[in-house]
Amino acid sequence: MTLEKYKRKAVERPPKTTIEGEAGVGKSFFACSAPKPFVINTDDGIDEILLRVPDIMVADAVPVGDNEANAKLYDSIIETLTELAKEKHDRKSIIIDSLDKLETLAHAKVCVEHKLENGIEDLGYGKGFTYARAKIQRVLAGLNYLRDTKDMEPICVCHTQIRTINKPTLEPYDVFTLKLHKAASADIMEWSDAVLFMTFKMIIQKKDTGFGRKDSRAINTGERIILTSGSQGVDCKNRFGLPSEITAEYSEYHNLINESRKAAQ
Image (tube, rainbow, N blue to C red):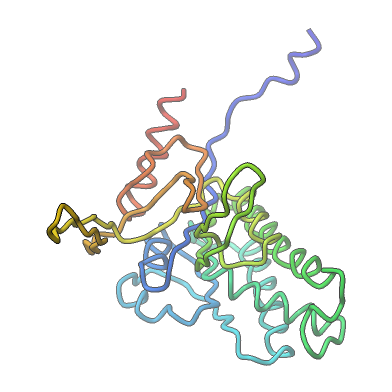
């Protein structure tokens, strides 16, 4: 039958992961726990990681506040991705830390290309954000290429922001989401096989205040956890059927993906 040519076997490739969370929760260490990491460092927090993860390579591209300089830093990221694609090396994972600072560099690149003095809003009608979105998509394309040709695992780190969601059938509600422009955030959600939300586990403590009343307050246990599927309060997802909550360890995350893939065979 002619349709036989459309049959194909599944190919297990490294997952495309985005890890989000508030500052200081451990996102960068999680990402750098991947095997033989190469880090594109845009967030100036790599030194402490280097003390704990010795086998690491780093390309610095930390924003400096000047559009001309930041545009050159964006170009340096593209050059680094090209070098990784062309040269022989032993790196197994490629990390962008962080996406929100990468977006800062993308904005600067657009400002320089279009000679904008006040910011990308000067282009009007959202054109500036469209051009910046294309700059981020170019980086994602580079990550895809390294995954497909070098078998490198791409991991992106991003801070969070609280965004109010308005839907016709629901009351407005707040959600933790990626600290990016809305269109860029949507691109990352689509690109990623998993968008993980790292946070501290909380417990609810109730106290009897008398007269039949009880006060409740959230207590931080200090235990780091990862949420893997979306809820009304967190914008996350995964394509592997992972448990909704896992411990914040890269090794467990990867083991659960492998178990899920074996179960599907």
